[in-house]
Length: 205
Image 1: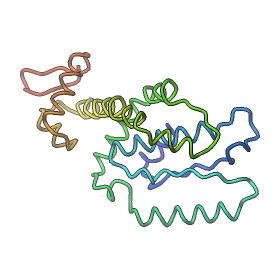
Image 2 (image 1 turned 180 degrees about the vertical axis):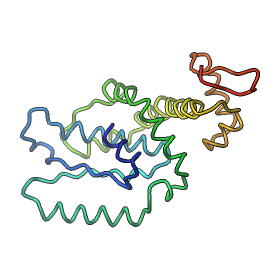
Image 3 (image 1 turned 90 degrees about the horizontal axis):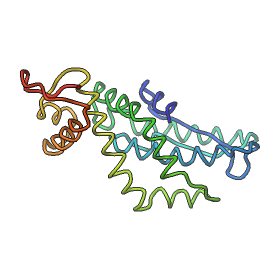
Image 4 (image 1 turned 135 degrees about the vertical axis):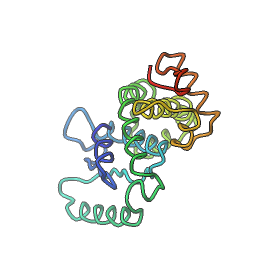
């Protein structure tokens, strides 16, 4: 996931991952199954920060399938052209986009832990992976655990630049003031941020 995030943060409009067909990997680790899980999780994370998840694409292509590789890459290039530049097409300003990816990078160890403890599964078919990652259970986990961490990370990343009021944070992240206040209170209890009485703004603790 770190490589995927780095590519997007550097301005890539799309990221392509290619691997051997499931069940046909020459290595005992069967990394293509792990890549499939990580692709699904990465797409969920991209969605949470407002990025079109289809900008990340994974395809199975054998070493002998040169023609298929060319067709897939041409198709992906066409799709990305239709989507438009990353951020701009989603209505996200350049600085805001940088902040979002920086915030995701900060919680990367947490995301890896969630993947290992809650999302590490091994199925035989791609359809089973698709069903699992689109299930109510996984979507609830994303909403209640990952989304919460992502918002707090965005807030602390923002406050790392300068102290801000609740309203300023709300406007910058396009969140309701009530939601921002809830996250600020939670972060303050954890000792992540503090309220500066002089400036009347929140700052990093």
